[in-house]
Image (cartoon, rainbow over all chains, first blue to last red):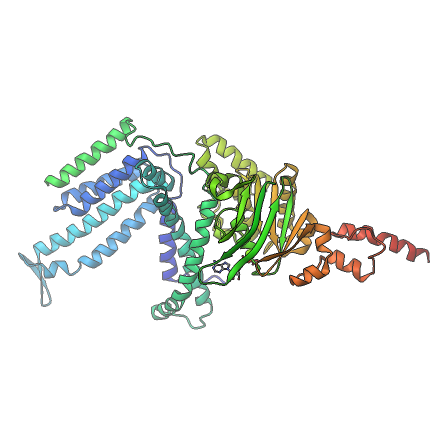
Length: 262
Length: 276
Ligand SMILES: Nc1ncnc2c1ncn2[C@@H]1O[C@H](COP(=O)(O)OP(=O)(O)O)[C@@H](O)[C@H]1O
Ligand SMILES: [Mg+2]
């Protein structure tokens, strides 16, 4: 009998799907290492800017890039919505706790212009950073990510760790979902959020055990099939010099400068 | 000798000793069975033979040289298919799963594509190529896991419980694939407690019990050695048991390993009865 998935299961499946999207093959337009460096610089520029303008610009650029690079919008939008949700939650109290020019009242609380501005800024910074980072990393894909890390001289063990991590999250979340579904199937009374939490808390111990066993075997499966390592020790130059790379670097430099001076 | 595991010992952290003196030798073009009850250490032995875990004692030799020294390059020569395909399938489509290892060797996408499609056709999973591996049936997952190893043509293929949880038709496909590998001069090791399956295809068999190798020999000899099998909590395949129950011991020169051989052995019996 078809039964609605619980909210928890749906959320976990979504998260797993986004990470899994990294596995998709894309033709990398930019050199992987420059993409990695750019995504880190741009995400930092967005997170640490003091105005709302540079996050706005970076957000706009990331949206344009999403369309230009043909990144699946559904995969891009999920982390951004998640960032929006979390940052909104965190910034809710800001308008009333920050001192400044009052622009209105909610009951006994005074909303200030500065507070509102700060809340907006926090939300914008968070979604701009996650947006630009998501689009570049999704475009890169896991394979490009690993290649870029290798080319940047990151030790092989750490690169493997990144791969294991990315491969493991969807599998782990699937395990969690399966266990929750199995628990819920045995719940005779239709459960609310309290019941779901209780079922979650009972699986934690078992989950930890399963997770470590699973991770151990997955690591072996990965190692068993990592047959190219050792031969591919060719170190590519960080900068490959195509005009597209120059374009991305110029864009990064402009946006960074903009967010520093604004 | 292609691969030799010599008297290895292994214990998992915080667990009892899993292997205490297990051995395995594999020649070129040979199908070797490793049989024994659950928990006797078959899987651990395969992991050691594949160079994925290191024995605490004993040694693994690939073509006469210590395997440890030849890693990671030697991984190309030894493929391992895990018992639970969920442990092994980690890509988002069947296509990527099969292409995973090849893509590390080959930057020519077309050549990767050709190999992937060829192996998919051989194993009958072409229509699954775009699907997500974790959404397949167990049998399909097992075939995909097998394809993801065979695609890079390892000389030795280690199969952990290839027939567990799969239907008869899938078992047939797996059997055909193994025999094909043998005909190409490649070697296959099968860890299993499916006696009928091992009887049908193994050339040589190792019997394990509590982490130790307690017997080794040609398949027919081992599988009709009821005493040895009993020690390992195993029973001979049905064909041999039927033959023994009927008292065919003296009448047939060789013990029937398969249904077909059993029928052959029974034929003279029916003839005499008919004439009387
Ligand atoms: N990952 C592990 N951690 C701890 N103990 C394990 C692990 N895997 C197997 N064992 C133990 O090692 C022994 C041998 O297991 P295994 O090699 O899986 O046997 P088989 O494949 O013949 O069933 C068993 O007692 C089992 O409980
Ligand atoms: Mg096993």
